[in-house]
Amino acid sequence: MSPSKNPRPRLLFTLLSVALLASGCREQAPKTEDIRPVRAIVLQGSDIDVNSEFSGEVRARVESRLGFRIGGKIVARKVDPGAVVKKGQVLMQLDPQDAKLSQAQALAALRAAETARDFARGELKRYQDLKTQNFVSQTVLDGKESAYKSAQAQVDAAMAGYRGQSNQAGYATLVADVDGVVTGVDAEVGQVVAPGTPVVRVAKTGEKEVVIGLPENKVDLLRGVADVQVRLWANPQHWVPGKIREVSPAADPATRTYTAKVSIPDSMEEARLGMTAMVRFASKTPVPMIKVPMTALLYERNATNVWVVENGAVKLVPVVPGAMAGNELVLKSGVKPGQTIVTAGVNLLKPGQKVTILGAEAPSAPAAPASASSAAAGAAK
Image: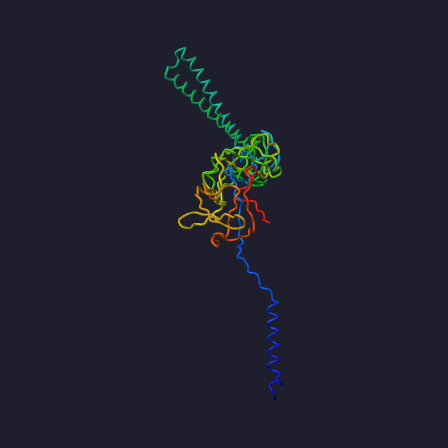
């Protein structure tokens, strides 16, 4: 076979031409730039050092747990929880039979003592007449006077016993000692109670307060805050000034929080017992402060730094840290309000690196009542 009739060189040439044409038509893939997603916040200066809110319950400042002064069986209950009572109104009654029998016994003892005293008085009168006629000696007369005085003392003792038993009979009826509202009933008809056992709770009408629980890491800080505001959950727009009246010296064993009582003014008439209320603490500093989360800090070369975002790129800026404010750190210098700093991913960046912000967590404005543990979040577009 002649070389001109061999198809193999022609096939190879054709395949090579097709490959060259395909490679020439293919577009070059663009080179991708390394852009790292980060989270960031816009710094804001605030003169509010403490801005915290806690929920609590409206309670009466004075709430009494009433009980009988004597023991016995309850035979009547006159009030229900939530009832409005007046001073002297009957709340519960015990079976008075035993108390009445004791009262009758004391009265009988008093009558016997009075009879003995009257007899001693008559004897003394007769012997005084005999003494004037010199029929008896002075010694005999002195004995009759002593007998009379002893009988009179027995009468006084019997009178005191009778009055005590009369009081005991009266204690079988439990009455309200103040005007107020019944907040709870702890015993029912037929139950036998011991002296002093609480059976009815009565909240005194008048001054109210909000009871809240303060966390142990803020109790000392909030104890000295003067700007305290209170609002009801049912009326969130109406804030009234409050005052810390009492802070428990020991933590609650169940919640591990310190109970604080905040007095509210009488002008807050819509506040009813058991309502949910919010208490806000706020204190201002002489100069505005900049606070950043701890995750925004980068410790490098024995210095504290933050990544500042400018024109879509980051640069490392050294800062001077100050005191801690809860979970945030106060910066003394190095940055200023309005700058954007990275709060997540600080260990994966390098100077001049392009970034894209996933979300901006801007702190709330100083005038807005917000909780210290919450922060507003927005998406950067």
